[in-house]
Image (cartoon, rainbow, N blue to C red):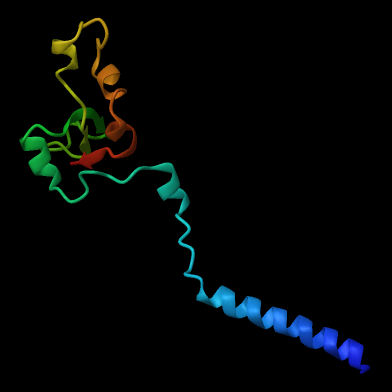
Length: 121
């Protein structure tokens, strides 16, 4: 290999080695998952859901049930679920009731109901 080519080769190899050393000093980049990008962190994640309901922090948002939940064959309720989330239930009383005529309208004011609904049997 002629000396000019060899010099260029060594120079290029030196640049690559320097770039690799510099890159290894960089901390790893934490890329959030798609779910983390779409939803905010639940501010109530560390709280007991039943305690939130009992204390009035979380309110009933919906009731879901299966086709056989209320059949005469069942001795009790089966397959009945309550959806709960945090919203201001006082909006209907504090504000003009025509602004928030239904629970759905009150829930639309809550970021929590859109992202962090809790389902309990």
